[in-house]
Image (tube, rainbow over all chains, first blue to last red; front, side, top):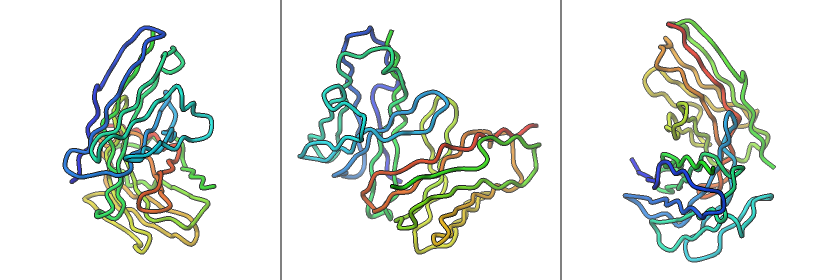
Length: 116
Length: 112
């Protein structure tokens, strides 16, 4: 099956720093990737849709200047949390859809961000 | 706007029981429906994918059904085991490349 990887799996940083999370489709090309956020004991909430070669589409309430998304190639999307604060501490997961697999969504393993 | 709900929110059963998890969605114009499993602090594991034209899918002890017209899906787990303890999420996209809307999940605990 299709594999999506994320790096890093866990990051702890100080308040005010920026953190970059990478999402890669390892064995397929993904023109569209999605970024989700999950707070403790809650379900996954879509943050933004990452489109290769164009600007990301953000969900309502998600600050585009704080969560920078770059989809520079068909296998890589990055999410940068700028000037992170403790309230940004969360579990971030990316996914990619494989049209040839009937639109099945393949998810990365997630990145646990803790901002001190 | 698509909304996905899951019932029950939590379930605790003794080992060996058969159980049913429910998922409902408000917009029946879906491309497919996917069931996932999430262990605490971990990512998602895809369990079953049902295309909109299909009625059900089976994998081992798992069987998922889809009734698109009524906006419902069920995940049936046969002969539950302690290793099945996890949160189960259903999710629907509108198209093959669309964002996925998740339900809130059902937290399952199987008691040995």
